Amino acid sequence: MADPAYIDPATGVLTDGEAWVGIAHASLSLPAATVTWTSTDDGQTGDFSQYMDLVVISYTRLTGTGGGVNSEVKFNLNNNADTALYVTQQYAADTDGAGYTGINAITWKSQAPITEIDIVNRSGSHAVGSTFSMFGILPRMVA
Image (cartoon, rainbow, N blue to C red; front, top):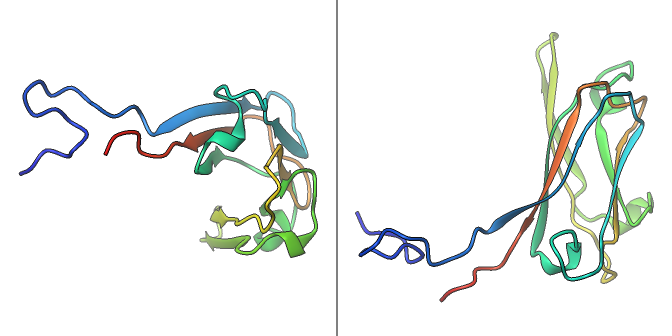
């Protein structure tokens, strides 16, 4: 088996930095309708503009009623809920009567930099114990 190009075969040391960078984390001790993250806009870790992609992984229980689309998580970028600005805000879900799980994908249809991310529950609040982690994906640093 060949070693990937970013591992030095002689030493086993990574020659490429970590591509996923932890940017923000929230763990709720009180219910919240919205979790908001703001870019630092300073060229440091919290500056959203330096990443190729942003990935949010959450473990969320919602307090809303009705299930299905009524309790899905929605992302608003730059404090803007105008659906015309979102190309692939797609939500796929599965429910077995005992729970509900889903995946959300969004493409921002604007050249404006993303400066704020709001994670919104469409029909209630994110419950106590919900966690959210955001990672920035860096471009590959070595050829």
